[in-house]
Image 1 (cartoon, rainbow, N blue to C red):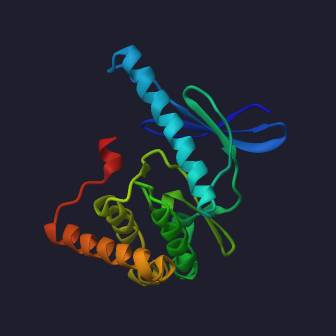
Image 2: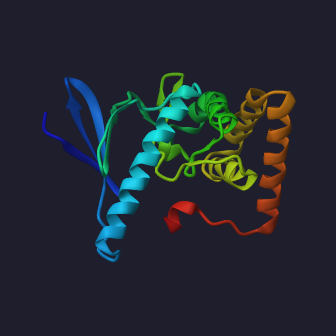
Length: 206
């Protein structure tokens, strides 16, 4: 099956196609002419491999996300998910799925994974099922600044009622004990970030 371009980004283009009759999505990182060629190839290769590792770790942590089918030098092939992007939902439906999304993010954070661009543009919704896509800005990190940024990105992207439902589920899923204490620290950092009155979306700097 021929690949079809479905999205163009600053770092990568995304295509649909198939592998062995399995519907697939192909993310291909593009070369940057302003970088020295050898450096550019090294950066793209490193980011591609890291994203594949993040996807595998996220799935192992119980988060629904694409399954990696193959990894090339600058390309990842993944299973294609059903549903629509959260950003396409109306407010009522956003509120309805918000708890599931909070639980999903908690599973990532509990496993030491930050997404880096956790917004409705990267959440797939299929009925009551939710999944996260695009780990291009993700990191293996437990730093409260990084964790809080994931929360803040969602807060700035959805209606207040949806965020309240999302945050309640997130805190509940992180639970008592060490994870509960970690969640409290993350929320405290979130408050600090908001009080600073300055916050830069990492994607704008990538």
